[in-house]
Picture 1 (tube, one colour):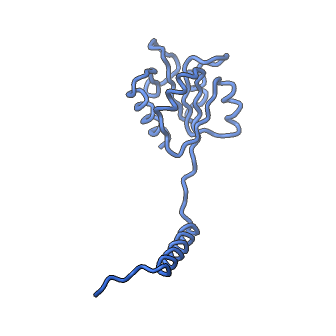
Picture 2 (picture 1 turned 90 degrees about the vertical axis):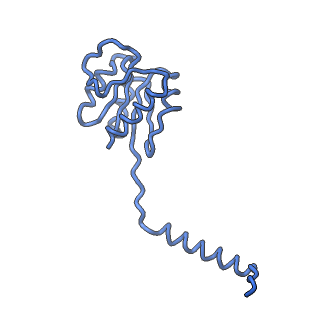
Picture 3 (picture 1 turned 180 degrees about the vertical axis):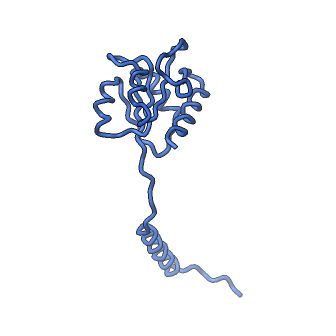
Amino acid sequence: MEPKEITLLTVIVLGIAWNLYSMWLSKKNIPTPKPRHVFVVEDSDDDYKLFNMFVHLENCVIHRYKSADNMLFDIARVKPDLVIVDYFLAGKVRGDKLSKFCGKKIPSILVTGYEGEIVDAPPERTLIKSPEREYFDKLQALAYKLMA
């Protein structure tokens, strides 16, 4: 048996078949996951850049706020699935108070560069900031755990 030549007609038929199959797949009702909203309240541009570089939360929309006031204004419009908040913030509201405000309805993680005792923050949801990769891995793992 001799190998058959691939003709232009064969290529065209295969192309049409592939397009029809693609159209059929696109019409199937394949559910796409709803994106999650993560509020990051961080007034330091440098710390936020590091967060953005090392923490990758799949299927999440990240909303960045430089103060608690701005976040509280937006919380009525978009309900976050998680709040990551810095302890020391510009403005009147400290991060631990904001984290407490979120309470049990919205999971929150408090991050700080301050290694002293932090009042009003659960230790299992408090992380000490560090430029080390391990800190960002812990933050990412805790974020996924709280959003599960």
